[in-house]
Image (tube, rainbow, N blue to C red; front, side, top):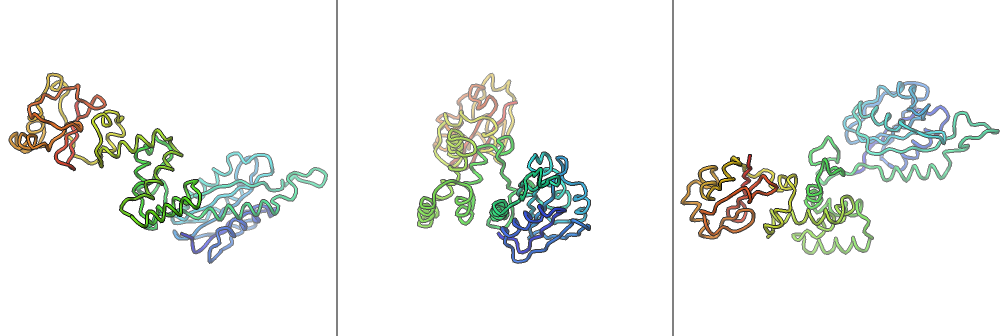
Length: 358
């Protein structure tokens, strides 16, 4: 979704930050552009959620220029996506980009992209040139290309990706497990899948066009989402983690085996069965063994009565840890625990219950 208005904000005593900021703005190509030059005076900005903003400042001593931040202090956004740019004199920009990103975030903007460009150093002279003439034509062309890639990627409902939104996805497995990561891409809408496979994968155009055509012919098969999830999960986590995610998904939605269930780690198990009813049982009771019917009708209310439990077991409609039960009196012991802690009871095809040993 392209923003309707862009705010091009810069502090540029020598003109280098201005040239790059304007080039990024050309890349954004918004219908309306508002230029805010903070070089000589403070500026005030009231950007809306549907706008975009570019902030460009020079680097002084490894930091965002202090005077620039003072002049930009009155800028305000409302969840407005922002591109932050720093110009450095061919030495190092150090913490400047992070400082500028934090600065605009504290004022209601959402940094979505950052860049550092070389600009002629303020100490540059004809005798001792330091990045003389930079940013040059090539630099500005690169900045414009950078601007083209910056528009905020949104979902089909218009909401953005980001840590402040629900349904966010992280590349770090500590925050989004490979299973959750895979499920995120597998469950995107048809419209989003067609966009994302072009943005987030390295598939060539012919392959993508063929996948879209195949998907359009049979949307219920979700060919596009499956390939999207495969490509991105393999790229970020590994093919091995992708296969584990597919296997974990089959436990809930397909005909997975008991062996596949026992291979799950605790985190993935809890994520797969997130939201299912949970019950607790003393580990000491499992050590001695509990008849299945007692576990489900006395220690929990998975079944309303022992008679109901026996009847459904006899009809072949009950499983423990993905194995069909033939005898309601079968002893359940701690040897049955998954990840040393869990039991999975299944009634019929879709009703799951998690029993936790404590």
